[in-house]
Every structure is written in structure tokens, then in C-alpha cells.
Image (cartoon, rainbow, N blue to C red; front, side):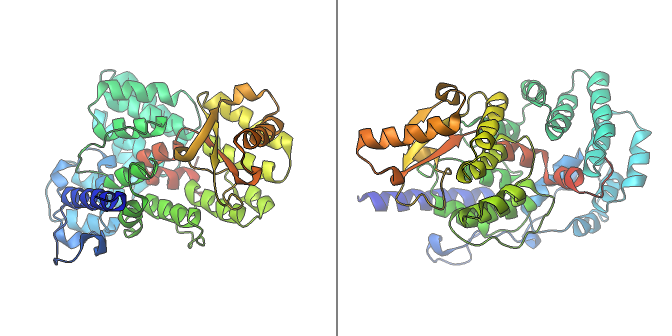
Length: 403
């Protein structure tokens, strides 16, 4: 069997398993490769009885259903805390918060925390998370809430809290996302019935040799069921040389990153530098550094790499060969790496040392320096952000919300 045939067979088999997991029924006997992966909400019976906390609603983000429609559907069902969920979906936050504050059971306190994060009241959310953790010390929800809020206030202690949550719970999705975040390219995919869009996004971060990129593009970009999927699809399009699609979620850091990336790939480095979100996500800091590198601003590049090394000590540079590095300069895929080196081995002037390394490596290997691209392996913060949820991103990042 030819190598191409084996790849096609593997891709079709993966697609078959994906369709099986999603519960998709074949409408016709045409080639599986020609069938798009779409989800029809009408073909699903949403099981409201399984809802416990507000974050369970993210399961429904796999379907193209509005919050208002889900709330309308809930009206004809009986399940625990039904009124809370309906108020939450209809954004009746003031009434909901007042009601939840009067209750002190574990679930109500966690739902209060989530609601406060969704309206951008981070200070009150932090107090609620600490109260939940102290009141129910044997419950994983307190540690999940604390990790959630610490992540969004850029407090590095969020990792310790998340590790405790993992040790206390059996949350397979959280374990999967944690491995993706850490850069484990050998992570095993759990067979889950919830939040499948996180599986999509998690798979996209892995080497193309493991998951065919064409399958992922079909799986992610043919569905527009949630802001995270839209943002990743936009990123895929720009990375492939396409134009930036219309920005659908202005609060989304990944969309802002993609907008800046689009400018960068056109050589508009100064505009890209102004457009990049100024947050302590090492991936964004690296991109900001790349803009400085391309503008021949050593101090700016060095400052960004130094900051990254503080946040992610295991981050490293790598070199790779490429036929065209002009548009993707500094954005090489780690799967194509031919040489790896930690920033600390480059001294304090990363800018000068990296340039020197590229020329020396090209000379030793007999390559033209113009064929050498580089990148940086950094933990995948965007996957954690998506795990905590786009509703929080909207609440925390929207300008008009209470902080």
C-alpha cells in the first residue's frame, strides 16, 4: 500500500470514529471524505436532568442553539434548579445573584461564582471562590473556582489550585485539557459525550503527523456553534494564508491575536504590535516579541523572551527548514524542528544570539539562512482559557462590565 493511501485510510477511519462519537447518521452512501461534519440541533434531545452547575451548559455549545431557545425548551421540563438555569440563560443576572446569595449549599455557591465571572465582577467572584473552598474543603468545586478566577487575573497560583482539582475529581475533560496545555503531544483522547469542541481545539494543537490537518479543518471550520470554534477557525484560515474573517467576538483574545497575526503576515509589523492583546499569556508575549524582532528592536524582543522564561521555564526555541519563511517568520511548527535550544543557553541578548545561531546552523548544514525559520514551544494557554469558558471571557474582557 502506498504511503498516500495509508494516510487517506487513517484519515477516513478517524473521521468515521468522530462521526460515531457525535452520533451523526449517514444520509447517503457517498464518500465519507465528501461529507461535512455538521450538527443539527433538532435531531438532539437535550437532557436537562443532567445539569447540575452552570458550566454544564457548555455541553450544549456543541449544538447551534441560542441561549434563549434553550431557556424556552427548559420551560416544559422539570429538573433541579430549573429557575436558576432559565434566569442564567436569559441573563437576568441581578435577580439570579440576589437569589443565589441567600443560599449556602455547594452548588448554589459555585453557580454564584460562575455568574459573577460572567458579569465581570472578578473581585466578588474571588471572594466567593475562597468562601466556597473554605466552606466545603473536601469538594473539588472550590479549587476549580479558585483556579478559574486566578487564571483570569493572571495569578500563577492558578496552576496549583487546578492540580488539586484534578487530584480530587474524575474530570476527564479537565485532565485532557491539562495535558494539552502542558504540551503533551502524546496525550490520549478521552471518549466523551460533552464539550466536543474542546476535543476539536485540543487536537488542532497537536502535530499534523498525528492528526491530519484536513480532517481537523473539516471538523472545526464546518461548524460555527460557539465563539471558541469560530476563533480557532479564523486562526486556521489566517495561518493558511487566508484573510481575517469578520471579528465576531471582540472580547475574544484569540480573535484579537489572529487579527494581529494577519497584519504581521502582511509585513505590517508596527500595526500588528499595536493590535496584539497586552496580557501575560506567553504565546501573546512571544508574538509581541516577534514584532519587535522584525522591526529590529532587540530590547523589545529580549524583554518579551525574558518574561516568557519567568512564566514558562520549560519554553524553548527551535529551528526548522522552510521553503518560504517570509510570511511565517518566527512562527514555525514545532513538529518540523531540526534543532532545539532553551533561552537560558542563549545568554541575555536573545536577539543577537538567535540570529547568530541561525547563520551558524545554516553554514554547518549547508543551507541558505533564508531557508531557516524558527519558533518557540510554549504552553498552550488558549486551551485553558477555552476550558474555563467563553462566557467568562466575555464577562471579564468586555469593557462595560463591572470589575
